[in-house]
Amino acid sequence: MCGRYYIPVNDDEAAFEAIIDQLQHLYGSTDTFHNMRRGEVYPTNIAPVITAEAPALMKWGFSRYDGKGQIINARVESAAEKPMFKHAYSAGRCLIPASYYFEWRKDGKARFKYAIGHSEPIFMAGLYRREKDSSLPVFVIMTRPAAPGIAFIHDRMPVIVPASAQAMWLAEPIPPQALNDVSDEQVTFHEVG
Image (tube, rainbow, N blue to C red; front, side):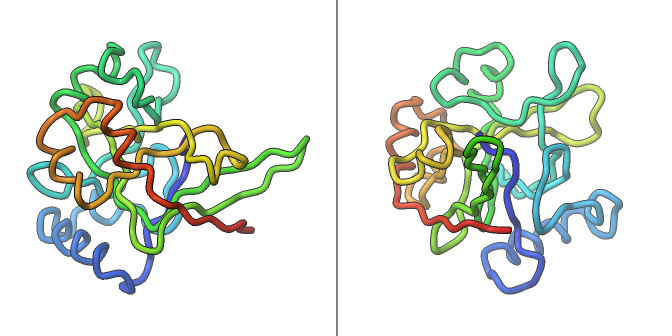
C-alpha cells in the first residue's frame, strides 16, 4: 500500500522543478496551482501527475462506489479486470513523481515510519479518470508485492517505473506481469520521525 509520498518543497531537484515549471505555465496563478501539495502528500491532496500528453494537477483518490471515502491504490495484479480501474488501466495511465514514499512497519502496538525510494526521484505507476463531482481528474497509485529487501516493512509497495519503461507505460497498457518485472529495482530506505 502507498498512503503518503514526498515531493520536495525547495528548488533543489531539477526533475521536479521542470515539472513544476510546466504546471505553472499551464495553470498560471489559479487556486488549483496554489493548492498543489509539496512536501508530504496525503490522499485527497492535489498533486503533480504526468500523463502521455503533459503534466497535470490531479486529486489523489477515486471516489468509492458507495460515496464513502476514496480508494487511493490499485493492485497491479487485478486493475486491468476490476470495474473501478478497468477503463483507466486501458486509457488513463499516468506517472506520479516523488522523492520517496512512506510506509509504516508495525511491531505490536508500535508503528515505525520509513522513507523508501531510490537515489534519484521515483515515478510511480498510476491510473487516472474524471469524475462528475470533481473539477480535477483523480488518480490512484498502482501497488505490487513488496520487493524482498523491504517486505519486512510492509507486504505491498508502489509500482516504480524505471526511466526505460516510462514512455511505454504512458503509451499502452503493459501486461501486469511485465509491469511488475520492470519495477524490481534496488530500493533504499531509512526510518524517519
